[in-house]
Amino acid sequence: MPVPASEDSPAPPRRGPPPPIPVTVLTGFLGAGKTTLLNRLLADPALADTAVLINEFGEIGLDHLFVRPVEEGIVMLSSGCLCCTVRGDLVAALEDLLRGRDNDRLPPFSRVIIETTGLADPAPVLHTLMTHPYLAMRYRLDGLVCVVDAVNAAATLDAQEEAVKQAAMADRLVLTKTDLLATAEDAQALDALKARLKRLAPGAVLLDVADASAATLLNAGLYDPSAKIPDVARWLAAEAVAAAATGTDEVEPNHHDSRIRAFTLATDAAIPAATLDLFLELLRATHGANVLRLKGIVKLKEDETTPVVLHGVQHVLHPPVRLPAWPDDDHRTRLVMIVRDLDPKVIERLFNAFLGVPEVDAPDRAALTDNPLAPPGLAR
Ligand SMILES: Nc1nc2c(ncn2[C@@H]2O[C@H](COP(=O)(O)OP(=O)(O)OP(=O)(O)O)[C@@H](O)[C@H]2O)c(=O)[nH]1
Image (tube, rainbow, N blue to C red):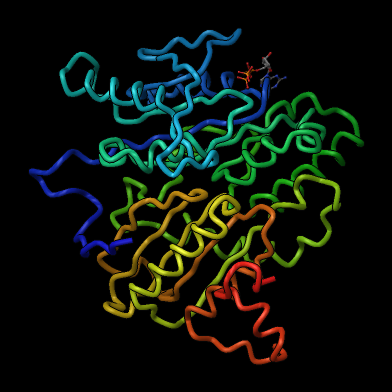
């Protein structure tokens, strides 16, 4: 991971490429209300210059300037790993949009919304935006919005692990069909669902569809266009994740949810770039498939005044971004991770091993077998 040179501003230099176009990915299980929500959002004049990519046109017609269908088409990355695929169809559709815009065939849209199919794993969509050399330059992920049907979500989350993954990876969670909940039991079930979603995605903003708007759902990324300095604290939501980490034991063991854990790592220590590189490489190589999302800001030893921002989805790490300065008073390294089938302690020990933090209370034998750097077979 080459750490880039400091930039004076997230905006590119005047004669360079245009600023990347924000992309919002809209997920949610079958019939959860994605298209209905999209339809409502597109009626907002603030989204008049939005291009929409949608897998299939459902019963609700979208009346918008450029709504484009995309076919399902998964392409494997050269690593050959199933979980880090990119979508060839999506690459073609996103390239086509840019061509149209650059040739004045299309109006100069300033935002893209991609509605996925209900069964979709969001990871390949995010990988497409993060790994394609040209698309990663012209587009940037703004956020992942997951629509959750308040009537059926509990049963769906119990039965479908993809629904759990969609919710766990989200930056924004929108509860639909709350208008259909009438009884006291319904209200109780809704509270339980909200608590469940908060455990799954403690860093995500959870809102009712009645409050869903361009203002509340969009600009979830690092760069809010209205703010000159990236709002890292809002984007990371490290405090919310840390606060929720204490309550995860209540999860019923049979739920798919119990496989998901959200946690933060924080340190005051400055990390040499080469050490960070090695840590991330080992994390990707040994646990990449289980790290559903990684967000972070890192204090580098080489220049403690210009932190690096990280964003990863499973094996795929977005090229790190060097900030010109710390965005606020918190100058600690903070990593926020959503993992599946992985004990946060394993990552914590790996991180501490790279930082040189001794495992003071580990007995000798455990220090050997628990060593996260030990060769496979020796480590537990
Ligand atoms: N009562 C109520 N019905 C809703 C709400 N949101 C969506 N619906 C209804 O739920 C049904 C499915 O909505 P869609 O917007 O098509 O859902 P979708 O997620 O796009 O569906 P797929 O594309 O098939 O996955 C439609 O009949 C909508 O009218 C809501 O907030 N309240």
